[in-house]
Length: 309
Length: 255
Image (cartoon, rainbow over all chains, first blue to last red; front, side, top):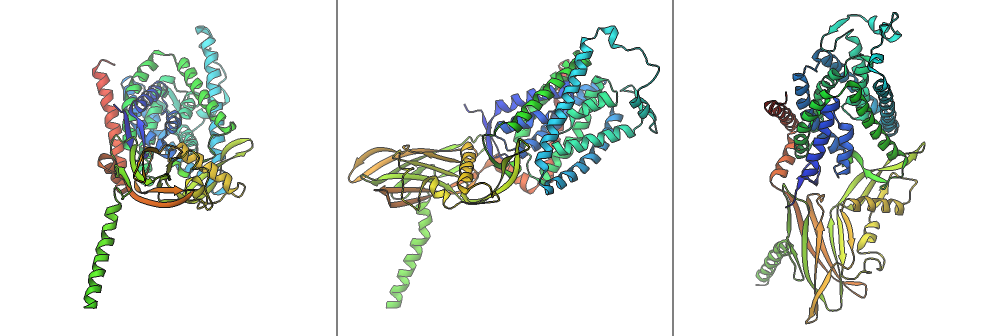
């Protein structure tokens, strides 16, 4: 019996079990770390023979399902700060719009691909390395060393964010800060996400942990909430503008990912914040190395389809 | 009387011409192809075309499946600051969307008179590249072939047409061509060339239609002509599935 199914928009036939397995694995990571998984899923789909634009667009649709499933699971566990999530989302939409215009300018100059790939490798490397070292350091410390005594002099960064106007309390995250900060950071992540063509989760998570000072478990749920709406927007835009959303592909992926996301969310609760961070950092570094090798090793094929199709 | 006779001849000629397409649909006098049409449905994973044909005794044969020529826009890779990435665009004109070829003789696809009439050499002479000043056309054509072969859309199988019997001054040959799952819907031409001493003595042509039917056709129609509804449908299905899974796991004691 053949387990192949024809994907009408992708114009190709793929094994059903492969798609369910891919969806399950990436959904698990989504629920575990609070990332959309696009930076993993899209390259894997391309390797399975799906054109890159169809892979990216259909993956956004899959992320909607996995994010809905995982956000709901984290919401039930009290891990979603909706107030913070909305502010990050608004900033992200503004930043993403600017990022799209920036890409247009770079394309006109002929440097878009170079900028995108180098940005990817640098961001993944910086984020992954910093998270890995910081988490490793914390895991090695004895419990009494981790809780640092309160310092009489707050850091420069802390003083700067406390000086911002309209300070408000975010109960779920347990932080007090100005809404200006999540708006600005959300916009920054939106620009990067537009350049790199991802949901932004692997950038947003470190931003929330290190710059917004949110606890890791709330970061996971809140990040998923923000990714959910970003990907709803991307799915509709891709379907309308580029006709690249393959519903059959998306449904198979999301069947696997929604189940995987549930298990990932449950396991994330059992791990310490630093354990989650170090695992995510390791994953990010692996992807960075894979992308870097793709840049330095001679490719098998010197020609590819424009628009991936 | 003469005018009446001319009218009858003209009418007969018209009737004959009108029936020609139907005669070429599935088989000619010499070639039979099964199936004569390919339908892409939900579980389509490629298709096999079985051929049987009669060619003159002592002749060799070449069977080609050719798609329509179309313009393609490709990205070419190059090195910038030591890194491999897309550095420019190449436009390809005159190349068929699909080219699959098989022959009775193993060497036949390599050796032929010029101008080439079959094989990759026949495609190379009609293809035009623009937008890559550094690379030669020959080098670009090799890269283009590598891309198409990696997808199964181009392929050469020397010696895959088998001679099954010989009698009464003719040879019977049989072969199977595998159409890839990536084959685009459209109209294709199947050519059977009979050759004696490297010269084409007969050329039979069949038409092949590859069409999308059923659920894939419905989705294509929605995606291409009702884009906004399709986008919202995709999102709604995703959200409902996400919530449904959440409720299912909740009811199974997840939390």
